[in-house]
Length: 134
Image (cartoon, rainbow, N blue to C red; front, side, top):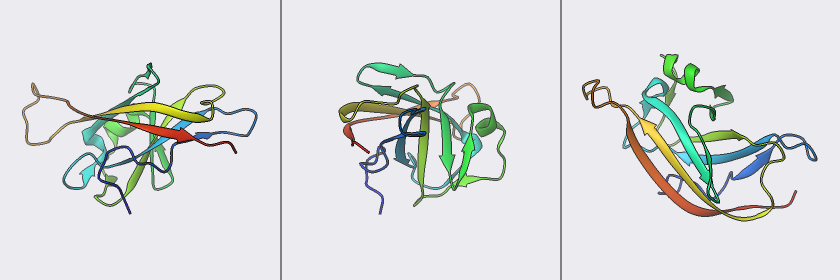
């Protein structure tokens, strides 16, 4: 079951082999009132404890597929459905230290029914999340 908030309490974790973590992951619900084609997402900014990670470098994972920003922009078939979880993957050698972190995510969304000059709408959320020891 998904929570109402954009940032989910489960799925905040480091990834990569133990002792050589490659980064961390933040699990999200769709920041929209309906399912949306992936090409309408223009990336996800993530900030943890004041350290910013740009949407241009973060990747997005859904249904065992991982997309870079360029791949998201070009994807014409895949969708993020209303009741699916997606995950933002952030490269940070060593990952995050175990403990409580202040996490914010800004999802950058385009709407097909708005003109191109009104291009990207940011949807921002913030919450505390915990990295547990392995």
